[in-house]
Every structure is written in structure tokens, then in C-alpha cells.
Length: 192
Image (cartoon, rainbow, N blue to C red):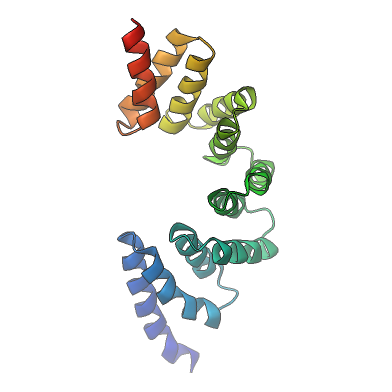
């Protein structure tokens, strides 16, 4: 009987993945939710469903599933980071900070974990802590455009225009859409 459901579930998953790929996260979540209910220990489906809830603004639902995933794997840096994003989107910064720190504690080389925590500190104007975290992110991913852009912003705020300019230009070369890097470079160029 379970085998008879598999093709139907696969079709539903493919349809949900299509919605996911199109950025239609609510529709993807609607398709994945019945499958996740039928397969409550399928971590891949739960993870995807939680991301859909997060990215469609359904923060409470996403936090519930991410918490469930952490009971299955308490040391998952990816899940800690996404739970941190959900808390941040819900304006619960202390909990978001704790989750990003848990991600770093679980894997100090996990991509984007240092950036995520640094960004939360940057938002709080805790620039020395943010700077250290952005530098750690760049140790892991030397060309990360967001880490370069936000590090450049801090350097500019601290008056280190030469290093800020170099980092901001590298950020723009990697991702020309980073508004913070463009604004900060405009400030530097205007002062010249």
C-alpha cells in the first residue's frame, strides 16, 4: 500500500519543488504540508517545508518545524541558522543571535553562519563584534560579497577609507546589486 502512494507523493513533491523554484513559497508549502504530515520523520521534507514557511512569512510555523528538526538533530548548523532567520524576521533578535551562535558552535566553518551573526550585531551597531565575525566569514569564504560589503561599511564608519574602498569594490565586483556597498562607495568617491 505504501508503494502505491510513492508515485503520487513524488508527483506532489515535484509540483511543490516547481513552486519553490518559482519563489511561490506559500503554494510550495501547501503542497508539502500533507506529505510532511504523512511522513513526520522525513527530515528533507520537513526542512523544505520549514523554509517555505519562513520565506512566505509564516514565521511561527517555520519556527515550529525548525524546532522539531532540532530535536532530531540538535547540532544542525543549517537548521540553527534558518531558525535564527525566522526569529530575526519576527523581530526576536536575542533568540536569533542565540541560534546563529549555536550554528557556529555546531560547525565553526559553516558557510554564512559568521555573516548571519555579524549582520545581527551590525543591526545593533555592535560594530567591533560584527567586524570580527565578517572577517571570520571571509576566512571561510574569501569572496563573500555580503561579508565584504558590511565589513567595508564598518571600516568606513571607523574612518578606514582605504581598506573600506578596497572591500566595497570587491563586493561590487562579486555582486553589483548590493545597495550598501554602492552607497558607501558613493560616499567615498564623493569625498575624493
